Image 1: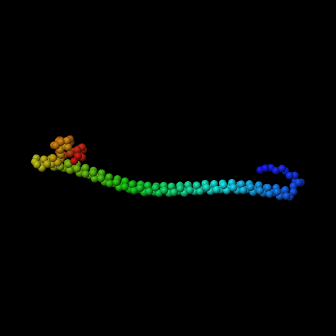
Image 2 (image 1 turned 180 degrees about the vertical axis):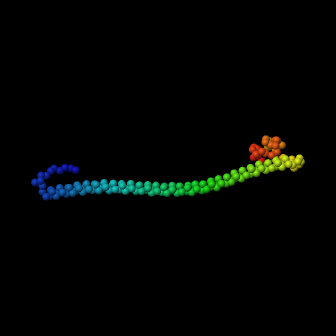
Image 3 (image 1 turned 90 degrees about the vertical axis):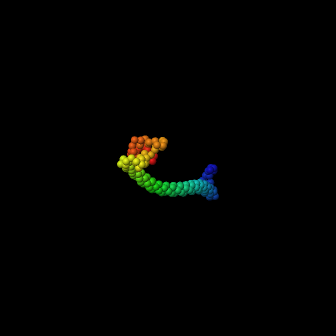
Length: 164
């Protein structure tokens, strides 16, 4: 603002006083207009930031909903896998029990056949039973198996039992 020279009060006329009031009002109007413009700019900036924050919040909400859906799907998959694991575990246990029964039966049958061979006198039936109990080793025709070279049948810990 520019300073004007002072007018002595005695020389102040009503026209000069009116002119001073008009200048004051003009200055106040200009200052108010400047402040109003500043407020409007700040308000527009705040609205723009709020809009950006709202957009980010909406996007974050969408991502959160997608993540929740994925977690639910993974939870359902996990339950399905746990159910399948339980079923397979049950099947494996049943198969192991069946295999143990089959091994026990094989040992029992081998023992029974060995006892039967001992009761049968020499002859064709005995020779056939001995051949069944002592098949040739894969190492060559007629070669005895390592555990069967001396006995009839297989003993329970026979390593060649699995080859049958």
